[in-house]
Image 1: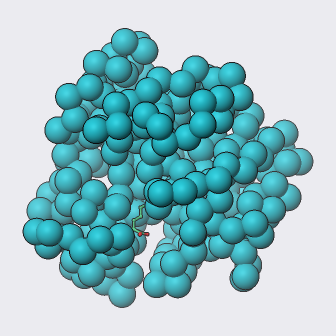
Image 2: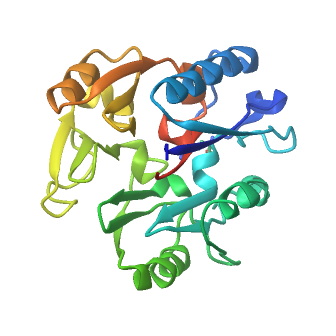
Length: 255
Ligand code: CIR
């Protein structure tokens, strides 16, 4: 059974997506849509089965579907994003998840963004960011603990999400932007350092031995290839203007 990748379209309103700093030049929604199509095609070629959900123009950030749920131990936890403008988004992914695995819910006032969640084997690292609070992390522990998943909280400073500066490369290796996290954050996992000048490229998506990497960053293809993965460069520069990286654009349901 292939990995299922849940993706969600880029809305017409995407130019109004949340941005830490105003995009300059402004976001080009049509270009973002073309880049999104390239990303989805790369997932498909890597062997993922694509489940494409329609965009909703009322939620400009809805293509960043990763933030709406976290999966570990065979369970999906529907998140409650920390940004009020995004709190309607998870409802649209519930059915796609429920068709494939048990779904647990999160209720106010807890908040958690999927972009703060990084699973390595039986450990789930949860970034405590401006978006993900103590109650969100506690709910994750309550849901995943009985499934044998250890939840470990990681302070996030100077970044939107934990995975804005790191991502897993298989179950025992993590890519980390230079200087972004204290060494040893991932408890003995192999940490591969991505140069600080290419920090956004520390976020990659793996499907089997294929790693989707951000186009335009010279080091990352070499780093993942040296780790035994086949790099496939994908251009998502318009999403980066809205602080979105590669993992943000999909929810992977393990095969
Ligand atoms: C936001 O600020 O919520 C969006 N503009 C970007 C979300 C990126 N998602 C992610 O890193 N998982």
